[in-house]
Length: 81
Image (cartoon, rainbow, N blue to C red):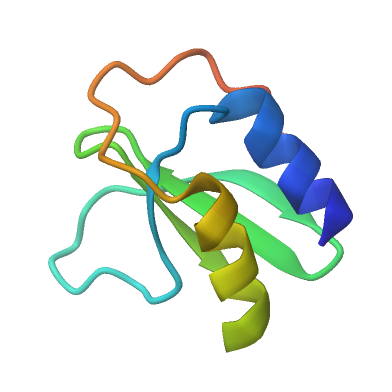
């Protein structure tokens, strides 16, 4: 989980809206992180990420650090795939 936290700190230091469940409306997603059994997909159109592979407690820890508002102007992401 440390690698994920470092990745989020580099790419989303001011936070981004995040979920730990798959969207149901079919938003186009791109995988930007896939390491240590953890996957992060981003929806560039709506400015949010989905994180998979964490327990509920781990997701809560990450969300407390980096959960925020949707990002409409997403910076260049340094992917880890």
